[in-house]
Each structure stands twice: as structure tokens, then as C-alpha cells.
Length: 258
Figure 1 (cartoon, rainbow, N blue to C red):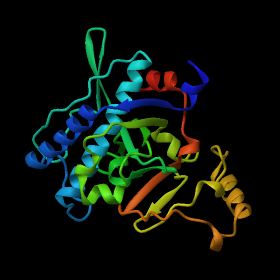
Figure 2 (figure 1 turned 180 degrees about the horizontal axis):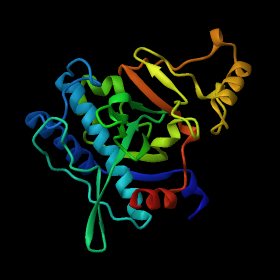
Figure 3 (figure 1 turned 180 degrees about the vertical axis):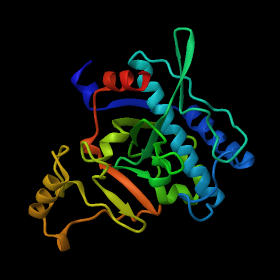
């Protein structure tokens, strides 16, 4: 594996692939095969729904294409199933030898400005079982030609008739969101919060929460910490800075296949 592949994976999403993902989102709206609630709370408009679903499916497709280059064939599911929380039976269906493996991977898509991998609490933990809903989380950022989130959620058709670069920035296990050996999250962001800019954070995962807090206390005083302009919509979010994500894709393949 080259040094570049240890940092990020790149691919191009064609006009046809973009349209396929958009049409998938339209069908999901029609069949109500995915929740129409906005981040688990209020109802999403049709435009917001189409934008979110298209962006999410494009992120999955970008990862699938990159993994194919790494030698892992993934069958991305474009079928719809009864029930609003059952768009896919599994995130990825991997044909391995004489069986199919369904890998629980949550793929997040965002603009090239993104600094965080953020996961809504209801997508992270099944509170009935206490288990993680996904084993791995992946961050995909789209190129600068990709419409901004606000514009796209007003008019999702802006995404059509163009091709886009996509970069798979990194991945994390569910356990990476916690301080090692403890069930204490590194970062929890409530609704309306604005995550800090990456420049006030350590570039890699510190040894403990105490270490993180000590670093933050020295980087910038609390009342002066620069924050992102984006306010979060979900009631509770768990996050990791993109710079903290794992970059070894052979390790990722081994992890999701185990």
C-alpha cells in the first residue's frame, strides 16, 4: 500500500452514479423506507430528505469504489425494504468465498470543509440492547464542486448533471470514540453546539481525557476557543476530529471481515 493510500483514498463519482443515488433517494421517499424525521427529531421536508439520502448513498458508493481498488469487492444494496428504518439489510454485502458477509459500516458524507466525523446518538448505540449499531465509521468528503449542504437541502436537484471527486478521509471503530479502556466519550456535542476548529485540538488521539483537557486548557482559553459556524441539529452527537481517524485501509478490510 502506498503512502497516499495510508492517508486518504480518492475516486470520481460519475454523472450517472450521482443520478442513480438521487433516484434511490426519490424511491426511498416514495416507499418511506427510511426515516423522514430530521436527525431523529422533527419531520424533514422532501428536499431535505432527498439531499441527505443522496449524499449518504454517494458516500457509500465512493467507499465501495475505493475498496474495490484495494481488492475488496462490495455489493452496495440499492433495494428498499418495508419499514422506515430498513433501507438496507446491511451496509455492505461482501461476497467472500462461498458466503455473503453483511458488514455494519456507517459511512458519513460531507463537504471538503468538514473537520469532524460526527455520529448522532441514536445511530451510534441501540439503547434497547446497549450494543453499537455499527462496528466501523467512515468519513467521505466531496470535492469543492459539490453543492453546499444548505443549498442542497433547499434544492437537491443541484447535485445532478455533474461528476464529483470524493475522498475517503479515514475510519474509526466504535471504541475509538471513547477514552481507551473506559466508556467515556472523547467529545459529546448537544443540539445547537458548534464543535471547535481543528487548530485548537491535538493532531492525534491523546493518551487520556485528562491529557486532552490539559492540552485544550493550554491551546486557547475556553471563552476564546474558535468554533465552526455549523450548529448541530441532532439532540446529541459523538465526534472525532478527522485528523484522529485511522488511515490504514488494509487494517479496515481485516477489521470488517473478522
